[in-house]
Structure formats: structure tokens, C-alpha cells
Length: 239
Length: 363
Ligand code: SF4
Image (cartoon, rainbow over all chains, first blue to last red):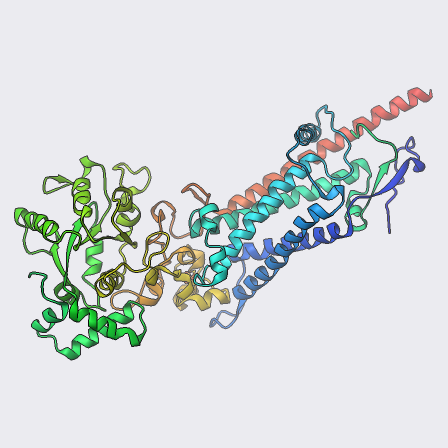
């Protein structure tokens, strides 16, 4: 496996002071890339469903099935996304320490504060985290976990809305009472959540590249290989 | 006309043949969504049930619901008015007026306690804004509703508050269900509701002697189960991805889907697409106008009508989600660019400071 060793590494950190740490287990990596690609597909198809931005070139009868096809792709991908999400909930408990997050601790929130200072380029006491820093975890809780929950439930409500008498529709009949109020509200929420995923993805990708670039820890390649490069002894400050 | 006669008797008396009577019953069964084999039930009910006294209150309204009501074709309005119900009080349709009709209302309320049906058209306001025959509307509504068998809230105003309740709602207009308690209320929203739905609901109550099955918003399931979009005649164009872009383009002429010009069909529960209007002639979407969602709660505040919008949950503010989303994305990208630049600058500075430190240590 290719572990990038950067030549430009500071001379004072000689190679033997570094080690490979196995951070992202294979299931986490698979989960990550399934989520990434399904989010990409869901965003594109979802935006098309909300505002159809292209039409069939042959403007004749309603013989094509373009919107129908896009909707099918969207729905199929949504099922994959949902299963993947459920799997991640399982792996939260089954995986290694890096697949977990403890948002109900004081440490988490203090860490978040210091990390925010760090990203504001201020003086800070941010610790070095081998997995995610608490701010990153917080962003996953908000944008990925809560965002996905909203997207999944509103989405399944919309999917079964035309068959109100079926068992499946009955399972999601409560959705408007929690998400959005009425049919229009649910639809709007589903549409708006799309954009939160767009913004989250952009920031997430930027942060990953930035981290890789600043601390030369192979953050990008770690999502393929599972390994990050870390200094051997405990470090207090990576800024 | 006193309501003692059965529906069948009064029809025969008016010169309706038995054959025509059966035809009406069959059509009625179809309107109610019953199976053909069940039309016998309707016939039996019409032969044995007495005409039901109805008091029709018009509160803060535009009389549009009454206008729609008198255009019913299955069952015909005449059949409903002369055979099924005995309309005892209606500002527009009653022959009597003034003290005479007010007395009649009170007499019915007493004589048919718990048997008459109260129809409400229009919404309820604070006392000072509406007075009918010397009583505040709120007062007479409460008084009349108290002993009614059921209240039929016809129209979006009486069901949900309606246009008069649009922000900032200066008259404090409310739905009937906000002020009437302890009496079953059937909401029949729409601005106005479809005539056949209005008469159909009454017919259901008469035929079966009980209220139709209601959904969580108090609407009869038989008519408000599905969205317009689920039965729309332009749905094939939607699935094909063929959309009207503006009202004067080629697609509008051909009859493409009106999704992109703001059609509210995908979020509107009503029976327009299958029952249509004016005896099944057409309905707004068929005639080329996007659905404005007039039977949905708060439709009056969730405009504009001719663009696709999303509402911010918990509010009645609508935005163009794609525009706002793109702006937000743009702002994020700009923020990232700025942050990256600052990071690079800081990194350089730190490296310089570091190397200086190192060289001073070495030197
Ligand atoms: S015209 Fe409206 S209701 Fe009909 S298919 Fe298009 S979006 Fe749906």
C-alpha cells in the first residue's frame, strides 16, 4: 500500500520518528466511499427533480421517461445510502476507537472550542488528534447524521406519498408532524437539506486536503489505505 | 317544505320517476366512491331516511363556496336541495329574509336538536368585524354549532382560516375548528371546494347516518386521499421531463407539465384531477393554469404562485431553494479560498520563524 512519505518533511523529524497508524478500518473506508458517491448522485438527481435543468431534445409526445428515470436513479441510490447509513450505526459500536464519537463529554466541547480557535488561526491549545478532531466530529453529527436522518425520513415519506393506503406509507405517515408540518413543508425540507449536503461536502473536502497539506499525515490517502502517518511519541501541539 | 317526508317521497312528489330516482342513487354511489353493488344501500337509505334540515351560515366569506355548491351535477344541486336536505337558512338561497329567516333558524335549532347539520362558509373573526342580524358571527356560530349533528366546514376559510387569515391577519380570522368544540367537524377545504365533493359529503352523511372517514386534518378521505399530482392528466409530461418554461412557449401550447411554472399539484391534496369541475369539464391544470394549492393549509401565505418555491420549515416564508443554495455555496467557496490563503500565509510565516530558530540554534 502506498503510504506517501513527503520529501519536504522537516529535517528535524527524521523518518524513524514516524510510524504508520491504522486509523480507518476497511468497513469505515467502504462506508465512506459509498456515502460519498451516493451523496454525489443524490445531490445531482435531487436538484434535477427539484428544478429540472435539462429536457429531452426531442420535443414531441411524452414518450421519453427522463424525469421518471432520474427519479428511479435517485430512489435506488437513496436505498443504498440508507442501508449504508444503517451499517455505519452498527459500526459505530463495532468498530475501533476512531469510528466512535462522544459528544456528551466536556472534553469534546472544550476540544471543539480549541479546534475552532485553531481554524480561526488564533492561539489555541488544540490537542493532536489521530482520528477526527471534535469540530470535525461535530460537523458530522450535524450535517451528516442529522442531515441524513432528515433526508431519509422526508425522502421515504415523499416516496410513499402516492400510496397512502399501503403499509409502508403508514410507517412514514408521522413524518410531517416532526419534519416540516405538511406535504409542502416535507418537500421543502428535503430540498433544503440537499444544499446543506452540498456545502458540507465542499467544506469537508477542503478540510481534508488542508489537513493533509499542513500536517503531512496522509489524511487523503488514509481514506484509501487506512493508515495515517504519525509521530512516534505523544504530541501535545501540532500547530 | 317541512323535512318529515323521506327523500324518496319528496322526489316522487316532484315528478321524478322511479327510474330516474335509481339513476340518481347509482350516480351518487359512484360519487361517494362506493362499489356498484353497493348502490342498493344508497337506494334504501334514500327511501327510508328523512330529509335532513341544514342551516348554512355565511361568516366572513366571498360566497364562492355557495356559488360552487349550486353547480353540482352528480348529484344535481336541485336533487340535493329539494330531496335530500331541507335548507332552512341560507343568506343567499332562502326565499325568506330578515326576522322571518332568523326565527326559522332558532326554530330548527330547537325542534331538531342534535339532528340538523350546520354548514359553515367563511371564517370566524373577532366580534367587532362581523355582525349578522344583530349577532356577532362568533356568537351565532357557537350557538348554532352547539346542538348540530355535525359541522361541515366548506371551503379553505372555514376549514383552515383562508385568505382573510393571511398575514398579518388583521381581523384575527380563524378556522371553525378553532372555536367549535364537542361537535364533529368535517373540513372540506378548497377555494372553493369542488361542488360534487360538497354535495357528496352531505350525501354520505344522509346515506349512512354517520360521518365519512376523515384524515388527520379532518378531511373526508374519499376526496382528499391523493394529491393532484398523482392523478394529473399532465403527469405523463412530468415523467417525460417535458415542462412549460413560460406561459407563452411551445410547451404551454402542447400541454406540457406545469411543474416549473409553480404547479402546487405535488403537494396539494384534492380531487380536482379525477372529479374535475363544472360537471367534469375541466380543472385548472387541464386549462393550462398551474395548481395554486387552494385546498392546502396556509396556501395564501406560501406564494408566489407561478414559481417553484420551498418554504423554510416552521415559517410561512418561501424561498427559491436553488438560488439561495447557490449563493450559500458561493459564499462557502469564497470563505474557503480566503481561509486557504490565510493558512498558506501563516504556514510560511511559521516556517520562516522555525528555520530562523533552527539556524540560530545551529549557529
Ligand atoms: S401539472 Fe402539476 S400536478 Fe400535473 S404533473 Fe405537472 S406538476 Fe404534477
